[in-house]
Length: 254
Image (tube, rainbow, N blue to C red; front, side, top):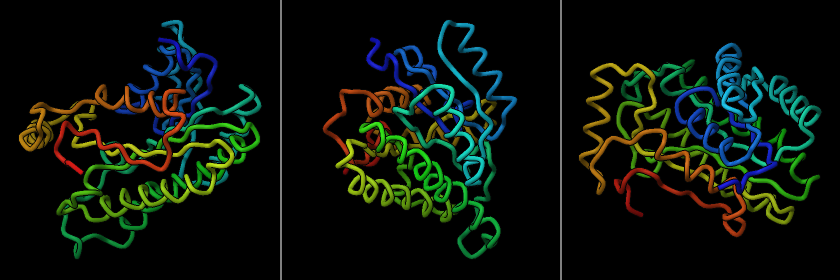
């Protein structure tokens, strides 16, 4: 299946976890993936790994919370590759950017602000830079990664859940703004996913516990999300926008 042939797709947080697995699948389907990643060295390694497999990949160091950094990334992609057909807003404060798991009254103001800066402002920053390119082209696909916790709630990490709920609202509103330009904006809400590279026994236990609440009773992995992401950036979703797809094995039924 090469239904992404010739498309340029930017993936924030693209060099690890869900981001790299989705990037590799999209590259296998013909896309040129841009790994827009805070850790530039890591992005370089992953881009070279994909290139060595005969796939098209470019690494660009990007801080989604910094508007100038995002603008420079979009300018470089447009200059080098000529277009941006897809955007996957995957970068987030979660496993690779540690967060506290404490009650709402114990979260510091600094951590609350950092969560919103990366998970909410970061999505806005990247979309604000990419949408004008897509509008000029007359076509584009945006996929924002939220979380199933935004639909169910979750104790001890209210700042994370709040940020991911904001992403869903942002997705709906942006879809209404840009639809007339053939720019599509959708959202994926994963369940508890074993995306850590070296998970501790405690993390594995949390993921296994989450599996018990699902219709499909197994641990969720990044591979479970790569297909839905590729679907939303591809041509088969050309009459779908403003939607949130829950991918969690049937834990949140809505």
